[in-house]
Figure 1 (tube, rainbow over the protein chains, first blue to last red):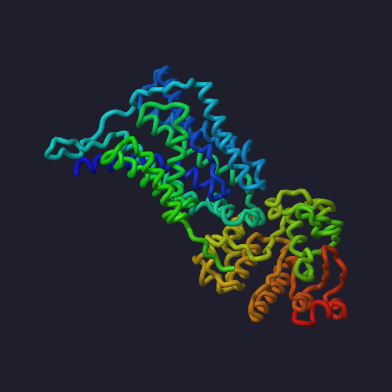
Figure 2: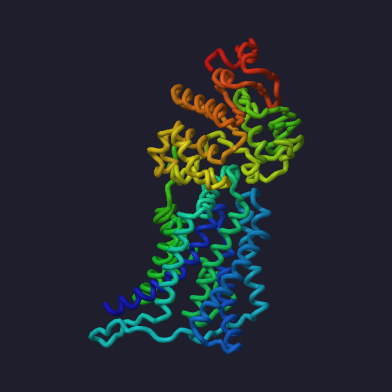
Length: 305
Length: 236
C-alpha cells in the first residue's frame, strides 16, 4: 500500500510534466490541424535555458531559491516563446494552404535543426544540475519501515501545474482571446470575416504552447537533474501520446492523458520492468488509435447542417 | 457606398467571376439573383477578400479595399452573414454574438444584444445553448444577429432563406426590411429566392456564369419576362 502510494505520487508528478507539454500539441492541432513535431524540442530548449539561467544566477551570487525560480521561469518562458513564435513564422506559416503533409514534414525538419543547433552550441554531453529544491515531507511509514515521501519539489511541480491549468482554462473559456482561438479552431474563414486576426491568433497559440513547454522543461531539470539535447524527442513523443490518449484538440483531454501516461509509466516501472516502460506507453497509443481514435475526451463531430 | 469594378476571381484555374461591376448606394437594399453556381457567393466573399480579386477594384466609401486583409473589413463597416450560416457550432449563442461584436465599441454591446434578442426572441430563450444544436432557421437568425453585432454600415447577406420554411423566410425578410429602414443600414442581399428578394429590394442584378447580365429596379426586374421565365416560374 505504501509502495503503491509512493508510485502514485511519482506518477502524478511525471504526469503533470507530460500534461503541460501535451497542451502545446493539442492547442496547435486544434487551431491549425497539424502536429507540431518540433514542440518536444521547444521543451528541450526550455530545459537548457533553465540550466543556463541557474548557472548565471549562481555566478552572480543570487542563491535565494524562490527568487531564482521566478527569474529562471521567466527567462525560460521568454526565450521559448520567441522560439515558438519564430518556428511558426518561418517554418509553418508559409506552408499554410499547401498540402496537408507539408507543414508536418517541415516540423520534423525544425525538430532536427533545433536538436543539432543545441548539440553544437551546448555540446552533446549530458548537463548535470545540482538539486535546487531539497527535502520533502514524510507522509507516513508503514510496518515494513517504508517511508512514503513527497518532496517539496514534487509539491511545487503539482501546484504549479494546477495553477497553470486553471489559468489556461480561464483564458480559453472566458476571455476574448480564448474565444478568438476557439473561433479560428471552428471556422477560420468565418473568424476572419468577423474581424479576428487569424495569423496573429495562431502565433499566440504557438507562444502559449511554448511557454507551457518551458515550464515543463524547468520541471524536468529540477526533478531529474540531467538534461541533454535529445530529451525533447522522447518527452515530446510521450506528450503527443498523452494528447492523443486524451483526445487531440481537447485541453482537459491533454491534461488527463498526461496524468494517465505518467501513472502508467510509474506503475509499470514499479511492478513490472523499468526497461519496458516506454513500450507500455506506446502500446497504449496503439490501443487508443485502434479502439478509440478520438481519444478519451475527444469530441465527436455532431453538427446540424 | 460600394463599387465593384471589373472584378475577376479565380478558384485555381476556374474563373468564377468574369469582370463583374456592381454598385450599392447608401441606404439601399440591393439584391443579386442567379442560379446555383453563378458566382453570387464568390462575389460576396471577394468583397471580403477571401478569395482575393485577381483583377479589378473594390471600393468602399471611397477607399480601395481590394487588398485589405479580411479581418480589417469589419472595422471599415462591412459585416457578412455568409452562405451556409457558418455559426461557431461549439460556442454558445451568447458567445457567437460576443464574437460578432469583437471589433465594435463595447459600450454598445448590451443595447445591440437587446436589439438582436428583440428581433429574434428564439435566440434569447436559447442563449446558453451551443449553436451547433440549433435548427437551420435558428442558425440563420444567429448568423444575421452576429453580423448585426458588428454594427456594420453595409450588411452582406448570403442566401438567408436557403432551406427554411416559408414562414421563417417571411420573418427573416421582414427583419431585413426593418434593419434597412430603422437602422439605416445598407443591405446587399444574395438570393436564389428571386421573387421575395426582388419584392424587397430597391434594385437588383442578375448574374449568369460569373457575369452580370441584367440590372434594374426591383419592380422592373420582377416584370421582365426573361426573369419571370428563368427565375420566377417553374418551381422557384
